[in-house]
Length: 450
Ligand code: AMP
Ligand code: GLY
Image (cartoon, rainbow, N blue to C red):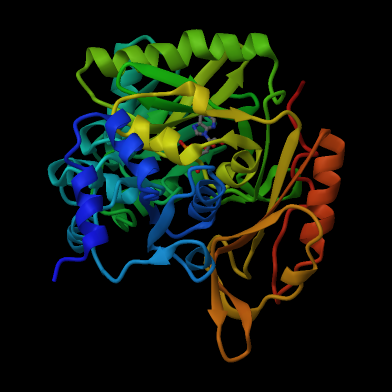
């Protein structure tokens, strides 16, 4: 027998306009059904912000995690094809791409959603090349005269050496998704040779080309925009801390913490970023016929010559999301749902004043490896803020969370001033412990040259 509720939910999808759907939904008290794709701290933050949306959607997550599953139901599928079928069968109203890999996997998450008639917040595969291919992104930037470091592409080891030309520091970027490990900033020949070996001889990231890029200097900032067809909205700026250890020492990581505030960078800098980078990117996408619905992350460096693009990512940042989302006010669920249907309604969300700081706790061995199975203590002692789980697992026998990955948790605290936010974030993070935990103590202290 057909479930009558499911039947009505499916009926909503036959209505022609976003307004008609929303009206029917509110008249019959049908919550929106949203699937978030991903499993890390960023997805935990997205799911939490969606759960806090006044429209009170029903939430699902794939593949999710034990912590995420406390607020978003797990989906009983193993792969993307089955996920699409499940979303169709269950009358899902919106799919949100948290993580990038699905956007370019197979036919692309957004492309598959489009075919299945499911609105998707996250770009189609063609546009997601902005993140998936460094060469594609560099050509896009150059074609549209958007400030970025000069770069050339090498096909093999010899070409790469020739392009480096003995000039250091140099920056080497593998031309493909490499889970944040495909970039090497090389101060000298020895580090460059070691990375060239990883890329061309060991083929650590698979077969692929290499970008040899000009070394840029200056503080980095993460700018996020929401883009939907003919409009864009710049969200709250953030900064992440990529190196493992205090004082920006040690290896690059996925991010050991983040700070976010509307006041993070001066208004004139933000205006310049919009005029020279965000708007030209938005117009470039249109000019190139690349449709875009979703978050676009601009990784920028504020160089002495002005802001320059280091990279694009076709999703929110991690851990920036864990710092930005707690400042979000309004209805993120409806914002993404309308955005995924080509209507960017910037009146639906704003960002609170004040500051947000998140400190990441990583497991022993990270980033080279990770350690799982260590008991996490102190999660119930938190007095302020929120803990987002990245790599944890619930142990039902011992009734506690265990480490289960490289980056384990992010403790995120908000306060009216930067001083207060960072003091509280570090204070709270210090109460959470597990064997071999690694944490930076200078997150949001080492700030911008303001
Ligand atoms: P990406 O994965 O492209 O964001 O690069 C990772 C990190 O490498 C960035 O966050 C920067 O710290 C650094 N980086 C990337 N490109 C450059 C560049 N052209 N000059 C200096 N540092 C860079
Ligand atoms: N925070 C860096 C990233 O999300 O790629």
